[in-house]
Length: 154
Image 1 (cartoon, helix red, strand yellow):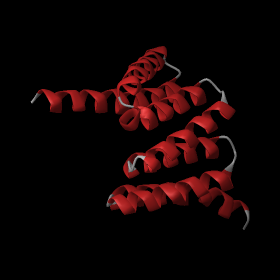
Image 2 (image 1 turned 30 degrees about the vertical axis):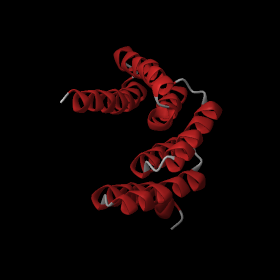
Image 3 (image 1 turned 120 degrees about the vertical axis):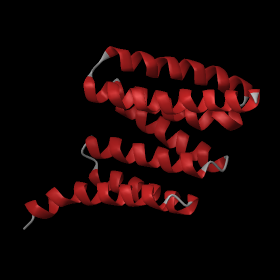
Image 4 (image 1 turned 180 degrees about the vertical axis):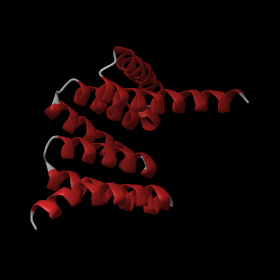
């Protein structure tokens, strides 16, 4: 079915773009940045056709690109916009993903309390969506983040 193929193409652009931008941040390889930037461009075009379906995805891709470029204030605003858009449009799984990535960004920028709040929100949204394994994965990550603090304060 042609509609199914198009839907899968959109998902591939979104998930591929998010993954590439995370890899660009971790590896510093330009090829990943390029894939992420291309995803932002494609998603921008998709928003013109359906803001309802693609606005939150574009905001999240932009947030990850801002974060990669160390434009942290812009990244925070874009993460927040993605979370609000996903919530308003009832994309709870994408709201969870935006909260999770925003939480990681905050933690990596030494904003532990604010980051943990976003991760708790992500965990709750994943559970609401029925993704218990994913919620457990976020919980495990939160434990690892807190573990050094607990060891340090002994």
